[in-house]
Length: 235
Image (tube, rainbow, N blue to C red; front, top):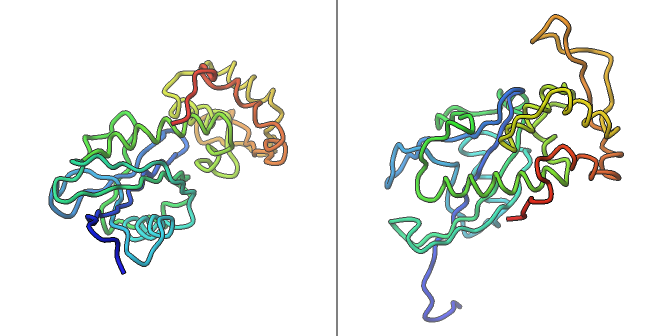
């Protein structure tokens, strides 16, 4: 039994994968393998199979095109402009993922020639994929002020300079090093470790870990790190 006099519409998934390499926030892209826009840069995407739900389809597409699995993945929004795909009427449900690049670099498949791009070097993407990325960045900025979502991008142990670089990449802002360090430590939400990262200086920088228990009880402590937190908007 089917609904009568109704037009079939394709449903697709597109995955916006943000990664952090310890210094820069990046976006994972691939070359599109089919027409239209063949060989143009694209997000990871595919059509939803009749037997799969959206979340299952998103994880399946992500694994098939990149080899990545077990990553943080969240539904963003549906994009359904009539002319967004020139071949057939297609509604795409966008998801965004957050990963620590070093943690998943051995898992990343190069079969589809996926490449990391710094956020200020993102090329023109097919269809409305650039708009999807901008929407995901806005959602990420909002959520990062209220939840420990950014720590999905960091290793379990991280330095204050790494954390600052991540926040600067997310909010496209430059923070004063002393003020950032003072504010982040004043939250009481980070636990200082005995060892240091000496890769970038002889003096080195102490490692820290997030106290997740305290964060859950006092997540608003991170709001004073965010530029103009009162103007954050949920999109």
